[in-house]
Length: 415
Image 1: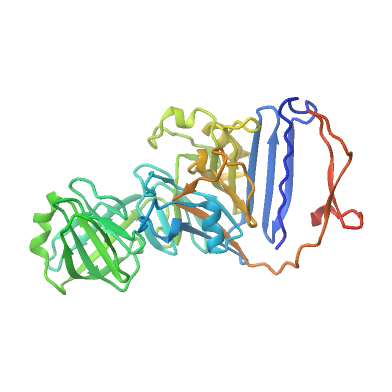
Image 2 (image 1 turned 90 degrees about the vertical axis):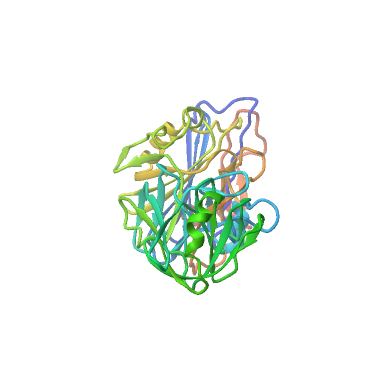
């Protein structure tokens, strides 16, 4: 696999070179994958971009959650984007969805056709399969039907149950918190939780103690809040068969979507800027000011675009959502959404984090988008970097080029 080297020399005290207001660096990262770095020295702003055709035979595009479990046995359910990528052996990765401090994702996650977290109301999502990529704002509805035909509403998936709610937990949720006065209903199943399909499950047992309960493999658990217990208890009998259906509806055919991440707000729709952050329940301090950003989009030529904007640092101020929407449009996106940003914004490529996270270190997150490359590229050739001068003064620019160990120039298309 071709090694990626990203070198950005920034000399702060003397300012930026006035005759170089905009710099773009383009790199062939892998077969079918292009990395670009754009530097606007006037704002200033540094943007990292990954572009790849999707679907594509040699590329696999997936989602993954921290530690493969939302509520882990110990500690917060968070993991660095780079750690998720290396653990999964991904070539590239970006942080994706928003999350609460305990690691609970805020928004839709589908991984390997399995629903892991339901969508946040009104917010945008990106979803894809081996055949297509779509952008939508899906509506979630869940139903649990007893053997006697009574129907109960399922309010969420793998999250804390609030008052008057029934929340489904799968083994991916790992540990379900049972509220005082509530209960957990365990059902056995041989199926994974796939949206828009009716699944037959068999009642096994109930758990009433107020504590965390680990969901065993081959089972679903339903956390029932105290006010719902009296409604559902009469329906319980060991071995009875129930039916479960979790419905996602919107512009997309959600039965076919095997991967999805939640974010928001929408940036570009049908080739035009479609930013309405307030409609997706975002506050002005989030969208109107410059911050580090992460975004995902699709061009009319079916090229997927990943963007990470560095921010809150002297060399890069970040971007407002209006600036981010214009950037995605400039990159050719016909559809694009914003993802989690701020200190979470991370761009991993070929075994290294290549952006500068604003916290000064990489922040653990709840989930990430991953790109896998099936490549038969030969091993990278040895090389060294040659500078046009031995000295550089503050505020000056120098030219760097790659040469062989003996000093012979390396063609640009091989760098």
